[in-house]
Amino acid sequence: MYLLLAAHPQGAVLQELTQAGSPHPSNPEPRPVSASDLAAVVRDLERRPQGGQQPRWIWHRTQDWYPSLLASGVELDRCYDLNLCGNILAHSQFTAHTDYAVNSDKVTLDDPQQQPPRALQPPPPPPEQDALFDDPDTGFSPRHSLEDLREEYAAQQVALASVSPEENRRNRLQLLLAAESAGAMIAAEMQHAGVPWREDLHEEILAGYLGPRPPVGHRPAKLEALNLELRGLLNAPTLNPDSPQDLMRALHRNGIEVKSTRQWELKESKHPAIAPLLAYKKLSRLHAANGWAWLDAWVAGGRFRPEYVVGGVVSGRWASRGGGALQIPRQIRGAVHADPGYKLIVADASQLEPRVLVALAKDSTMAEAARDQDLYAGIAAKGFGGDRAKAKMALLGAMYGATSGEAGRLMPQLAKTYPRAVDFVERAARAGESGGTVSTRLGRSSPPPSDRWFQSQRSSSAEEQRRAESIARSRGRFTRNFVVQGSAADWAACWLAELRRRLRTLHAEGSGRAELVFFLHDEVMVHAPEHLVDAGIRAIEDAANAAKELLFGPIPVEFPVSVAVVDSYDHAK
Image (cartoon, rainbow, N blue to C red; front, side, top):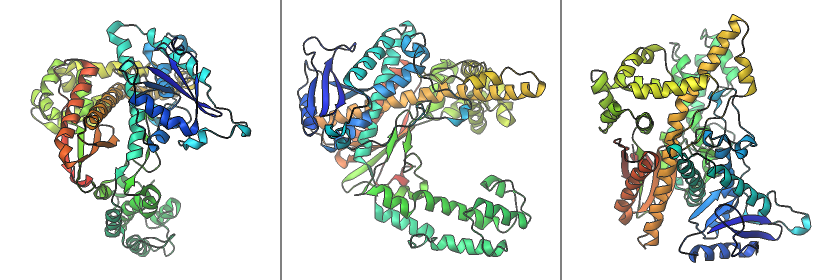
């Protein structure tokens, strides 16, 4: 059952659709629902599926609807996020020939290293449910009418149906759309559940690093002590080390000729002020990013609830909006602590991107090396005389385009031993250098260059030609990595969706609730009752195997998952 949900001046409106997007012939009329009744209506439809199938909810954005439903105690099984799916279909090479893609606005890149979000403008923060249903007397008009959304869904289904079945492309793209939509639900559910966070432990950690909590507007004691030390060493009694301009002037007056205050550049100087300056910068970052102000703003009721942005990076990786959810520093991971009677199951996919490259390239020699738990050691044994460090440097250089230095010198040996893997990323790089696009395993494609990029390639002088070649190589490095990082994101999206399904099954069977509470690229965290830990580990591992099968079929490449069961996050690694 496909149910379209749209905002309406008096509340919401539901309409049952066929899979193709037209009104269902047995129930073609829209059904208005008041704001106060929406949660109950949705709950009833979820509990009483028609024809034995859970409804698939179709809406503009999951964040517009699902958070408020979760707050009302309503959990959904499936959805189709028109905004996320439309972004994929607009850019995918699989649909490039369709009217949908031709007529869609494209995100283009001048500098691929910028990695902008897939949407030109990020969506606003999710509104409260009441904000969706303003008083009709105010003249409120929904931004997207029921007809708008129905036409959009139908157009997307036409584009999907037009994808060539060659190489199973249509099924792969369909899988990506389902996984992306599931990811949107998971993001909302993780925000609702929150990361278990002990405020008292966070306070203790901050006190250990920075000293007692200072009054608002004052530096913590240890930062102030370092500041006073720096003022003396640099003979700068009014120095403010938080001001880059002030700091640079003080450094230059003392003969420290640096062009920036980056750590690697400061370390080149032997001046006695460098050590306390580096210590100050490290503690200052902790204070600014995750200090007391962050704790007050982002942690409440023992939970950290950030907002995740699914597909927030062009490769398909997630981003976050506020709170730095994807950058929890090691210093404060001890504050991420399981509730009494619970454990944190922290799992990460070992060496995910190199293993994805093996699968993409169908490099049987590297696949044999990848059967070991340590892929780099396996590669080293076959081509680098057992030197793991060199094997890792060479493989990462191939994926990221490091063609100079030690990585560049190791490349010929890697290409000789593993020609298919190296050729795969080289072809992706050449496509990017020529202004082409590349696609992930499931069909997410890189944004095309802008018109300005193409203009830069039409050089007339030797200097312009050198600059054009540099710009082209930069794009080649981007597309080289895009196919690997993006396909790893495809795998991770399927891993998440499969894990969610298995955890929901455990709950439905009455075993208890284990919740996904955190995700970072190739790592998940499940907050589980102690009696569900073994079942949670099996769910994580089975979901990883299922993701491999979904993307690549029965291939001889392993995707091992490292699992740690801990009370606090700092003990996981």
